[in-house]
Amino acid sequence: MTALSYVLQYLHIVCAAFWIGSLLYTELILWPRLRAIGELARIQTALRDVRMRKIMGVFIVGTIVTGFARGLTGGVLDRLFTPYGVLFIGGAIFAVFMMTWWLAFPPRSLKMGWRLFYASFWIVLAFMIGMRFAA
Image (cartoon, rainbow, N blue to C red; front, side, top):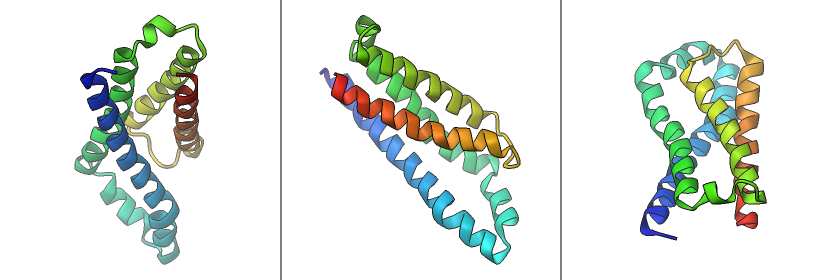
């Protein structure tokens, strides 16, 4: 592994840790508590402000872009038809969907789309774990 691959791997993990941490906190702790006290709509609107979305965007897009870059520097293009390459392509498809969905700024009323977004996170994580074993 080159120095660039190590740097990309580190950045990928840092971005992903921030993303998963914020995802778990908001969905499992913050939203249910705010819903219980009747403040969910007001607070959620403030948190979906453009400035707040830019902060999260750095980590969401950063996770996906560094994941692609890490794969490319690791030689995934030479192994596309191996289990590692197939897992990389599968993860990339879901990652592009997730990034596109999030950047489209969809309203929370599109519950099925958000459920697919959250499910895709775990699918991509499973692909990444599989890639570790297939490498």
